[in-house]
Structures are given as structure tokens and as C-alpha cells.
Figure (cartoon, one colour):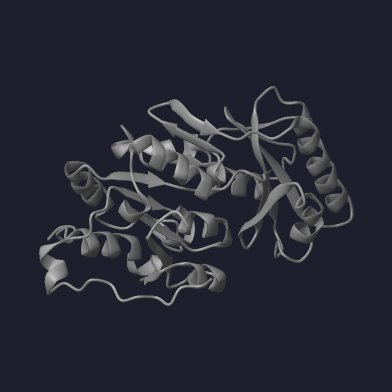
Length: 290
């Protein structure tokens, strides 16, 4: 059932004297924390320092791999839990907190379907996402450039179905709109698995039990944090289950309409530093560089 978006505490009045009791902040990356040019907001590291001083945990939740997230947050990575690969892999300080891996036979079926799509003229490629690395068969620079944006650790192999790694998900990149051909072709797996459109050009196939929401709930149990103490931000369909884990759930102003319907609140857009502005407002933190 969609929420009617309730007003936020204002900078004056009772809320100013009593900031919301938040213990865990979870944010998606692309379209949410990052702007449209994939840049982190100014003041991010300052806000992360203030959260750490308050004892508030901050956790990025992304379709990106763990190695990529750890590199992007290197200045603040110590003690940070990373929700990677759309919730299939949660790691803190190099230690796995949870994972949800795919059966090998399913990986082969998905890759075979991608190969059939490509043979039929669809400009699509598969990224088999393992715990240690991502694996691809396509070697053209256009495809590899897209892979490098999200997978720091990646290898080109002859057969992605034969890698010796635990597979967390299979991500498919379609240079056309993914919902035109590739996502519909993956629907045959939806009876037993999660088929999630995670962007205009990406669709992910994971175990049915795997999503960002399941990962956040596991992390809440690990940290002893309640939904009332959890603040979550998202913008796309792979964030829906995550929004259900928090009483303070925010859709970005630029979010997919279904995400807006699912969230309790609206935040300014990713290009207007919506995540940092909302964090500082709710927790009564000074604005960065103030």
C-alpha cells in the first residue's frame, strides 16, 4: 500500500531540539547519493565523520560489487558495512556478514539466454558476479567501459559459466532500453528467482531470497537497530524492498514512480544533494562546511 508522504521535521520547533533517533543510514548509490555525473556530493566525508562521532552506522547499498564500493569509500571504509551486488553480499572490514549465491545450473541457463539474445541482434552482455571478481566474455571496449564503472575487479574469460567462484548474481547490460527485450527475456526466471531492473540499461537475476531489503534486515539484526532507527534512500526498482525496512524511508525527487509510491517521504533529487541535506536535517547536524 503506498504511503501519503508525511511532512518532515522542520529546522524550527520541537524537532530542532530533538533530532530523530537514527542509528543506521542506508543509501543507494546511482541516482541517489551520486549525481547524474556519478559524483559524490560535496561534504560527504565531513557528514560521515559526524555520523561516526554520533555512533550512527552508514551503509552504501548498491548493485556495484564490494571491491568497487570499498574503493569509493576508502577514506571512511573502516567499520562500514557494504551492501553489495543488490544485497547478495554484505561485507564489513573484509569479513562476510551475509551472502546469497546462485546455483551453477541457473547461471548457465541465464548466460545461454543472453547468448541467444545477442545472436538475435540484441546488444547485450552478461556480467557473472562472483565474490572475488566479476567475469565477462564480451571484449569490445564499449561493453568493458560499462563494466569498469561498476566492477573494479573484473576478468575477461572464455566461458563465464566455468569460473571457479561463488556467483552472487548475473547482471545484464543492454545498450538499448533494457525493458524492451532483455528484461522480458529474463521473465522466465521470475517464477523461481529475482529478476530486477536496476537501471535503464541493467537487469539483475538473483535468488528469490536476495534483495537489498533482506540485506538491510540482516544488518539491522547484526547491529541491534530497529526500523524506527533506520533511514533509507532509494530511487529505482531494486530499492523497493529496502524501503520497507525503515520507518524513515525516502524516495529521491528523481525516483521511479513506483519508488515514490512505496516510500514514506520524499527527498530532494540526487543532483540537489538530497541524501546529505536530509541526513543533516533529520539528525540536527550542521550543514557541511558550516
